[in-house]
Image 1 (cartoon, one colour):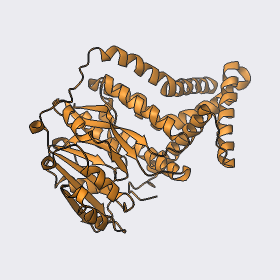
Image 2 (cartoon, one colour):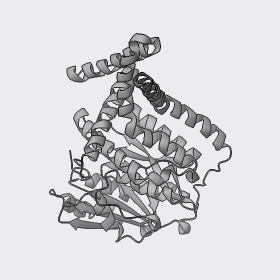
Image 3 (cartoon, rainbow, N blue to C red):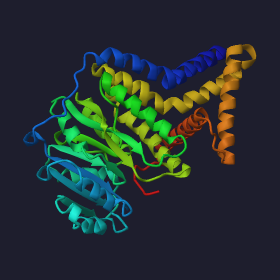
Image 4 (cartoon, rainbow, N blue to C red):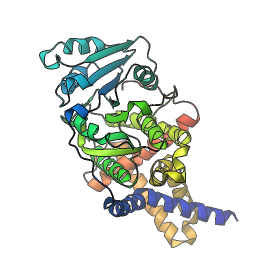
Length: 388
């Protein structure tokens, strides 16, 4: 009985690991080809008088290094000044973020920028700051954007065109890295492609905090301990029956480089958030949502348990290796791959092969995901943001 249980647990884990990393992306491609012929492209041409009012909301914690450049970027965007507001919500900053922002607003380039700086004395966390700031915003559309990300010249105009469709609740941009670290560029190219394909068959899942747009009327306040706010907020809107689309031509370019240690800590937090959002967005698994339920289960749902499935696959394969050639090969392959990644990590070696770099980044990501999940379950992750 125990032997049979080990066999089926191991086999199921191997199948799900392969499906999540290989089968799901390929299946998405096939489904996109079937759906694309029936979809209509949204026109980007709108009369200027019909453009919605937009507020760019930027929660900030100690962003003195980037805030001036961000405001200059926003001042140069192609959008009517009388329909654009910029809100900088400083969450108990201990540096001079607010002072720099106010000084930059006086520059000739930024003279026409409708900037409003909100300074909160205490650091409450990003989710609470967004709740407070959103209560003061009256525009039709809100763009949430990280201060360290510059956005493309026509981003607001392109996004506004999508909101002419009444069923569109979220518009996502394409996230780009100015100075990607090892494996990061491959990871984000993969993630951007997956997000675009998910949108093509139903709705994209979540967003990236660098830049995304929502209908103001659809905003629901966050719970105080929300971790992945840029996933929870868009998916709450999708859960209501609205679509989240991806506009590839809207670019958000991350200026802030990250080293391996910073990236790992960021992914720890995301891993905790992945676990939290699975519990809080169970409604997205409702079959009535069609493609959204399928993509949420295949992507975000499996991602939470993936590290534990990989561990089960490794241990189970090792236990069954002596009596089954398939499991012997599986155990050897997994042990070799994980052993190499561990060796590279301990020695600081950077593999030159694109495949090896992708493998190292993938294993590091799942390791962070596992630790982050355990941190959330044990209550160690508090949902607060800090500069690294």
